[in-house]
Length: 407
Image (spheres, rainbow, N blue to C red):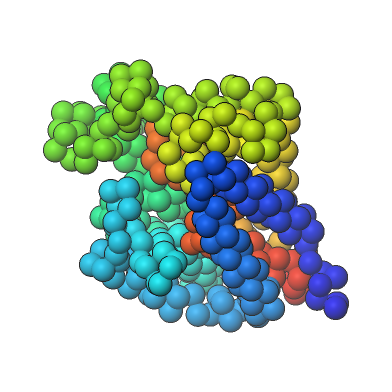
């Protein structure tokens, strides 16, 4: 019982609340469609997730750390296997089927990658300021990200890159050099949107580089120029690089009314659902957009609009409040713990969780292109749910051992 007395309620309770929101939203989203079997399937994943939480919580965290490279190798093998034997869903071969359940290896691999990268960066022999060590550190997340991109799953790829910068910076690497690496990548990707966005980002990126060093240097022109040139290339050859459905998503993000019955349909209907919820919402199982299924598969990436319509601004604020409590608790733990491995692991998960929430809700509100990113703990999907529950359980394990970790 002593171990349960050390359970961190600031992590466990928000997680439980978010899962409850998710189950309620999934039930409502599938009720009018007669597909409540999805709700019971998610409920099954929740039970399995609780068993995983118990297993991770009572396992010595050092055992997980020591075997992280083996787990990472297993995750990479799964990502390779899914390219050959995976099931295609919504244009991406990201799933492996086991009986009545489908499993998405990329969701669990992201969590394993965070732990593996934290172990490498916290090793006494690792000096992130040395080029070989820096390249190895970057290779740990870039390898699975590249395999996920081949599926192709752009949304998961972006979230897999989200924790690189905070973990590298926290390990002692100069922020300026992070910008030097990411500016060309950012500018090349911005070329997929339009020339105006590319130009603005190029000017902004160059200004940031100058401000960080407080002087203008030749390599800043070269980095910004190389990125701008890459952006011009992607802008010119977008049709040859991206899949048709990816191009459509970008076009409808810039102008949803360009295809209101096609690619822009989900985003427009989601905005209507959120706006119609008002302050108190229409009531559970009473949402017009939800029950009449104006938004296809609304129990996945667009689950937030279901909650916003039926529970209103009040329910949406409560949902976001739970995320805020969870994230703030994790941020506090990053600064409170004096163990480098633990600090880096938590920082990586904070970045991943934050980016997931921002992108998902941004998609729903129409301020970010629809790229297929689930809302953690809330959207339908066992792989994402179990992966996130596993990470929270590991961090609760850290809290349980706080005396040994230097709180």
